[in-house]
Image 1: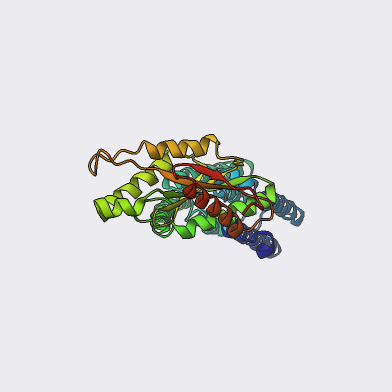
Image 2: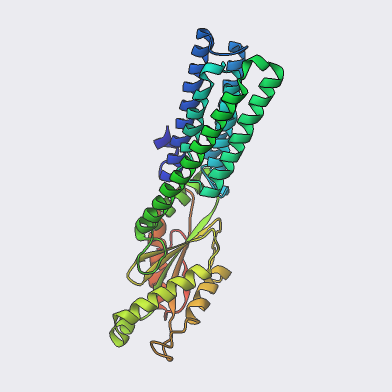
Length: 357
């Protein structure tokens, strides 16, 4: 199912896999609750109540999976909806702890840690510590409510000790998860960004094209691709040296990032060629403000340490994605437009419509 519905969008497919893992965990815990009821480890818990709770959680996750299939989750800062999913898990586990008999209630702490593990690769320390506080408050509130309604079901001193141990364990898990998350972000950046310019690497920008295509095909959201090539870069390299050439590339990449939106993507295609993906934007001609801004920003680059007379320009080829079009076909159109811009005098942008190669 994942390979069919999420073809070309590996990150979205991974999010769905993780969510399905969470669903499997809830089903496993629900089965354990059924077993606990039969063995007498649940207090005043009917099988019908377990069924209602399990059905409710399944309904929530069905909505989450639908959002992921439709691409709605990609509008959020965290497309994995990690925080929301962990909060659902915390409330579910707290409900189970409320109905557990006293002698096995301590096993709930293991389930809380399991829920926190889903945030290891996504959440920051601040988020994890907030979740720790919420968990401590919910558990303490559940035990206080249970003690007020059935004093014999709770040993206050034992519950205080369990609460302290739970808080210590979750704080430790939070710090370890934050360390792993930082390490993962560092490794991910090395793998996905160009070492010289700091923009996305060739491989990653092609991943972006695949994701944008998949999202556009599902939700009808437009996007456009720009191919940019620094004019006369080889001559600059020959005149001023390769270190100066590296400085030009870095300044050019910085100008591209500074003059695109936070939702756009900038990547290095190779050498002095760069790519800009305008997300949720259909560029229909070369006069688009975003394109003209890139041309002007390039002209305004000044590198007095190299030469006060050095002037930098770029040529741009533009192509807007057409539904059903392959990333290779889109890239070919943008590349053909870039070639035309070079042939027509450089320092300009050319838009290429489908079927005009």
